[in-house]
Image 1 (tube, one colour):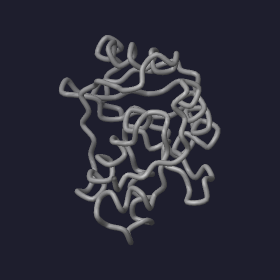
Image 2 (spheres, helix red, strand yellow; image 1 turned 90 degrees about the vertical axis):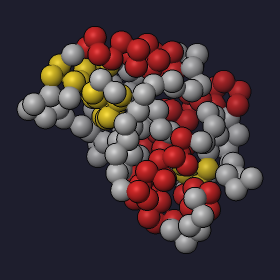
Image 3 (cartoon, helix red, strand yellow; image 1 turned 90 degrees about the horizontal axis):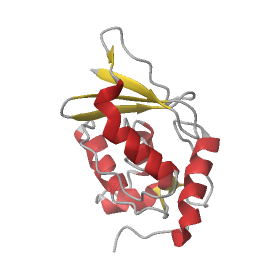
Length: 167
């Protein structure tokens, strides 16, 4: 696995992947921190396109990533990641909205756990999921990072605070 560090407004993000795609995005702190394994290779050139797209995103000029991704997890977790990927830029939804969208209305806690295990945050936008009461809830990069990302996206004038995924 190759990796590099990417300077961002959230601090140094770790990008890790293989030739076929991006496998991990790690935050500089919090439960979403990812450290390179001993057998990983520092290889910045492998992530030139991802770095460019992240730069555009953080500059407010990109609303959707176009990267090859290799998310991993259980079939349920991958189903949740698929639903997260469908949350539009600048919008938010609740864990219950995600549970309903995958046809598992009562699996709200399991959806929350799967959301928390997202190996590709920001690109698979788990930061767009909020509590039922509209509060910011856990995020691997910390609540300050989640707030920053939501504010970044709302500045483009598309910041609607709720979304019904069941439509």
